Image (cartoon, rainbow, N blue to C red):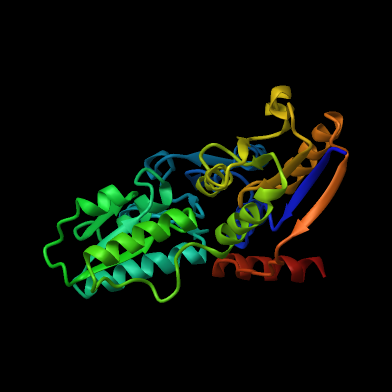
Amino acid sequence: MKKVLLLRPRGFCAGVVRAIDVVKLALEAYGPPIYVRKEIVHNRHVVEELRAAGAIFVEELDEVPEGSRVIFSAHGVAPSVREQARARNLEVIDATCPLVTKVHLEAIRFARLGYTIVLIGHRDHDEVIGTMGEAPHCTVVVSSIEEVDQLAPPDPQRVAYITQTTLSLEETRHIVERLRERFPAVQGPAAQDICYATENRQLAVKAVAPLCQLLLVVGSRNSSNSRRLVEVARNAGVTAYLLDDASELKPEWFEGVDTVAVTAGASAPEYLVQELLRALARQGFEHVEEVALKDEDVRFTLPPQLVQVTTRLSAVER
C-alpha cells in the first residue's frame, strides 16, 4: 500500500506567524500602502498574497517615500538600516523574530567585551547580514570547518561564537567542535541560537528517514530552514526534494517508492501542504499517516504599536 507520512511539527513557526500578522494588521489598521523591506518571510506564496493585499515590498529603504510606514522583515536588520529609517523619517514597525533579536543582543554583548565574534551562518542570508551589522569591525562569518581552520583572531583567548537561527544542527555542531579544538577558551551563547522550530523539523525528518524512500519539503528556494530539511534527509540516505508547491512534482520521483514523507519549512503555509497531499493522492498515495514528534505552543507578542492599534480596533468593534 502506498502511503504518506505527514510530519508534525511542520510549517509556520511563531516568528513567521507574528511577521505575517504584523503586515496584515498594519494593512487593516492603516490601509495600503504599507512598505516592507525585503521579503517579510522567505516564501513566494506568502509574499504574493500580501502584495495582493496592498503591501509593497522593496529591497532598500531609499525606495520608500520619506515619512512613510515601513515594516522590517522577520530576519532582522543592521543598525545602519535603522539609522537610515530615522534619517528618512520613516515610521518603523519591526517584525524581527524575537529569536533573531536574541542573537543580535549576543553580538552586541560579545563586542562590548572585546571578543572576536565568529558568526556561523550563510553570509548572503538576510539574517546574517543583519546580525553582522551589529559589530562588523570584530565579526567574521564562517560556514564550514575549513573556514574555521583559516581563522586568525587577534587574541585567541577572546573568541566567541553565535549562529544563524536556521542552520543544520549537525553541521553547526561540527563547526562548534572545531572552534573549541582551535580555541579552547571560546565562548558561546547560554542557549543555542538555532531556533526551536528549525530543530524540531530537522529532528522529525531524522526520525522518519528510516521509514520512507522519498521526502518532500514544501518551501521556497531562498528559505534556509527549508533547504536544511532537504540536506538532513539526504544525509540520512533518503531522496529528498524542495518544492514551492504541488505544481513542481515530477512523476519520475515516485518510481520504486511506496512511502513518501511530507514536511514544510517554517515559512510555508499549511494550505500548500494540503494541496500537495491532494496531488500525491492522484499519484496513488491516498493513505496519510501523521507522524507527530512533539507539539509546539510558542507564541510571540506583537510590536507595541500594533498591540495598541488592535486594542483600539477591538474596542470599536465592540
